[in-house]
Image 1 (cartoon, helix red, strand yellow):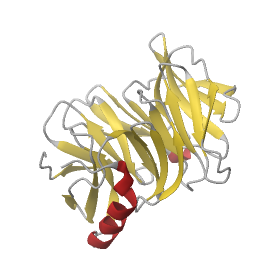
Image 2 (image 1 turned 180 degrees about the vertical axis):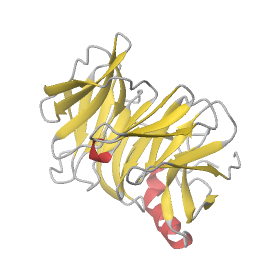
Image 3 (image 1 turned 90 degrees about the vertical axis):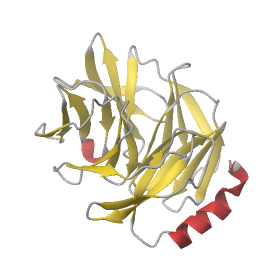
Image 4 (image 1 turned 180 degrees about the horizontal axis):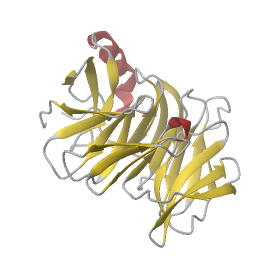
Length: 255
């Protein structure tokens, strides 16, 4: 049974009461649901969906940004809504700062960069950002700076953009980095290439492990956690704490 968006406060309360084990993050399911993942030490449980109608989401630190229909919701880890705004019901790339002060949505179809900040109380504010290529990932904002991974002519660039104006002030070529890619906090980059999952830190050092399945994409599911997107029925998550990579298969039951 689908749960309307209006029940988010009730569902968040129920979720907080039921999740006795530590919450490591959230994953999306094939029905557009948002499902909590709890557990420790490789022993995890994927709970039933606590929110439906999800188009896109991203979590970082103890905060998340969720696109549900035409609503953009900045939430805490318990899914309490801190700020909400409007967003077209279209494809988006989302990112949220680890301190919850700023959420970012990039809309490829219109080349708009939209921000949602609880401190302003003004809802969603959008500006144009002509990327000149395909935006593959949006990274957690640092202050009012947004990082976007932009693919141009088969190469990935890191574009650092002013959230308020959409103006890039620095662009850096990312040699060797390929999509699929996920920009993380601390200028870290998670990507897959040649059958490996690779974590590159801010200094350029890399850690890699073999990918269990061909990786089609990544999902920012929580603080230092990402889900691997693939055509496989198996659901995998990777922990990226510090410079280490740890891979776990999640117990998954489709709805």
